[in-house]
Length: 354
Image 1 (cartoon, rainbow, N blue to C red):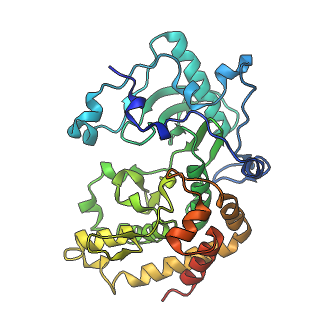
Image 2 (cartoon, rainbow, N blue to C red; image 1 turned 90 degrees about the vertical axis):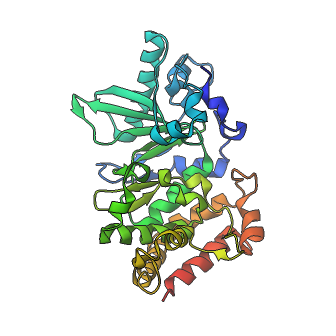
Image 3 (tube, helix red, strand yellow; image 1 turned 180 degrees about the vertical axis):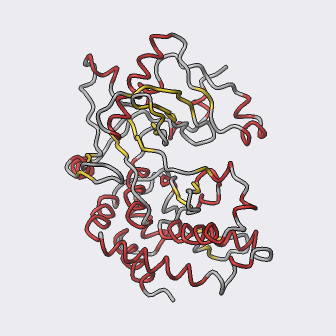
């Protein structure tokens, strides 16, 4: 057995991040009305002073994992079949006391999202086929099984800001999330991960095909190149496709093996894989939905222009996982003076889609 988290690059193993003061103030002072919430919630979670008696129970990824966790066997990361068959591994701590403390922290995280209540933990598990091994927590409230678990993740500014932007552009109901410099917590998106479904059957459904096209517009707008990974997509009960991995956004315009620019990585991949069999993904059949969603994205941004571009301006000097700032990337990757300039051009382009 080994401590599985060290199988991942050191750059994404950070237990704490520095949050620029202007971003910290922005989130700390803005309550949000989440879908289904009776009252607005603040999405910033304060931390107690380091070394205080409360610090061991503070909502952080490390505290939620707890002391002395039972490690994930190495073979889960070295065996391709295990990697495909299993996406989670039970998170247990060696002693009952360690387990109890970790569950107390998990309940505190739930309260940040769901509000006051009598919660109990059903189980916790590592999501082992992801870059940072988030902790998924299933729980009950006063004996009633909750429909959606929560995820406790290592802190990541790009994930936080990307979710803010996606909540605006997608039109999907917003799910609760919270953060501090040592954790990112979010309510699970209702639905099933595409990697656990038979997409050949799903593709026979017109609503699903339309959902894929609309999701491709969202992925293209935020330039998320890794969206072809089926573990990064959720299929809802009404067959919509929802995205959730925003730390790999704005990576720069991609190209295929022939050097052709790929402006819509998800749709391009579907056309490549399914074009002959499922002609709905080929022009002109796909065009009506594509144009409609582009215009809707532009309308959604314009309706919340202040919230959207306030965030874009805050992002300019933030460095992503490549250690480049978004201001720099706007210039070298997108030939724009700034990230704000890039998105204003994109909104105008989408509003004129035809």
